Length: 143
Image (tube, rainbow, N blue to C red; front, side, top):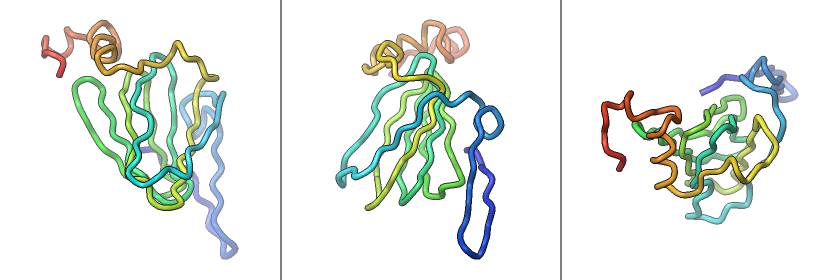
């Protein structure tokens, strides 16, 4: 999780995000996900090189991460607390509240070739020199 500066004022709070200061990469792309129907799941992919910071601008949602060894879930519900996701991590996003808005800061422009959209391809990627290579995990079989 990444804590961002929160400047409190009686008129409301303000959070500013600066590339390479609050986010560990230059920001090349910003997008947001909203009006997600109840019960829907977003993402369901990994990236080969892209770094991202996820923020709940409004409402809440849950991000599930899988690096090929460990699975973790994070509930995001405060606009000044983000979740950094490194390359080579499978992610799904679900449990959006009504009015939930997920903003994503990305380290590069959209490039389809950077996406890993099949979980089988993802397990091959992490086992073949991705962030979790086969030697480091003791030869554990992919699930």
